[in-house]
Amino acid sequence: MYGKATECSIAALSRLAEVYDGGKTKLSAVQIAHHRNLLKPFVGKVLTTLSQAGLVHGSRGPGGGFCLAKHPAEISIYDVFKLFEREEDSDLCPFGGGICGVGVNCALHEKLAKVQDAVNHVLHETTFEDFRAAVQDHGLKPTLPSEVEEHHKRETYRAPYKRKGFP
Image: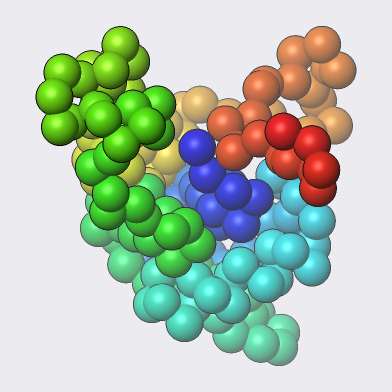
């Protein structure tokens, strides 16, 4: 559904939302990467993009780091998604062969339309306030990567990786 940069950005922003206190607490790219089991250089790269988009503030030096530029309730998942993903404006059904929509819809058209509506709802209606509230209001403690057993790791929701020459 989305790529690695989007996933990393959502992970980084969710961590910043968990500690959100109006900008007093700042986390380094290393701290975020450690807490989310991500590569530090990649976290640094996406934080630069997020800073340029006005979603995070970054400062260097002692006491520096990153914090959210806005309250978590003001940042949607879509705000991140649109920075890294290409939006499809086409209404063409990928399984219709140019026929679906002209006449009778293909067999998968309605199912795919429902999936797209659900994805759009999550992207536009979900904010990073969910992450802040989970930790600060409901007392949920994020699990560190070192505490996760191999058989309990979640499945990724990133777009599947495709190698050249293979479907």
